[in-house]
Amino acid sequence: MAKQYTREEMKARVRAQIDAGSPIVITGAGTGISAKFAELGGADMIGIYNSGFFRMDGKGSTGGLMPYANGNDLLLQLTHRVFPIVKEVPMIAGICGSDPTREMRQFLQELKFWGFSVVMNYPTIGGWRGKLRADIEAAGLGVKKETETLVMAKELGFYTIAYAYDEEAAILAAEADIDIIICHLGMTVGGSTGSNLSGVQAFYDAKSTGKKAPLDEAVDFVNMLIGKIRQINKDVICFAHGGPIATPEDTQYIYDRTESKGFLGASSAERIPIEGPLTEAVQKFKAARLRKG
Image (cartoon, rainbow, N blue to C red; front, side):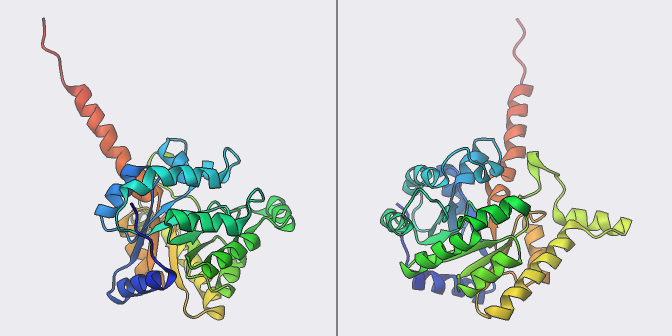
């Protein structure tokens, strides 16, 4: 059963890794086997949230942002599937903090009962734009409400992580003194749902044509958001996630050019790594020939 840690213990664990020059690596787990091997690989935290259910069912992580199921119900379902597999790694609860069907303090206390150490605002409406985003915020069900729930989680002793797709979300999280703010670049590109080109490969291809590579655009975006965050909060830890950041080489590129101290890998950690090997294994089994006669 996964071990539970206090907020102070989490802060100490994270700081020790960063001081040792090691990035913090968080992986998503939509199945028990993903969590099992993420722990064996040395993940610093493992996150459970609704997109993992859709991702590992072959339906795409975007399903976690759609009204196909209640995100907090799926979180609890996945908890019972994943927690018995994990031994020591701190577990993250990805919650829909604006869920109007739940009393959030009671729900957070339930998550503490199950053994979570960290709370994160996913699913989130942070990636929505235009009138729909404005309408959701006006109804009190947007990023502001999600941030208020993270503050409540912090008061209850959880370590907290906030996704920030834009300046507004980054500023809210910085003002709330959330422990980690993740600069989110959108859904991960790569594997069967996108280009198979890594960010680093795309950089060199773009350089030859004189265009700015997606990974350099990611660097600019991350630096811009961190700049906004630093104007408010000098101590919060910042990560980068998504978009063209899909491989270990891509994360190194980001670490070398930004203040990012870590990475959350969901599709890049549990979907993309298995797509090729699984396809190739079946192809090899299929290539065997039957004895004639």
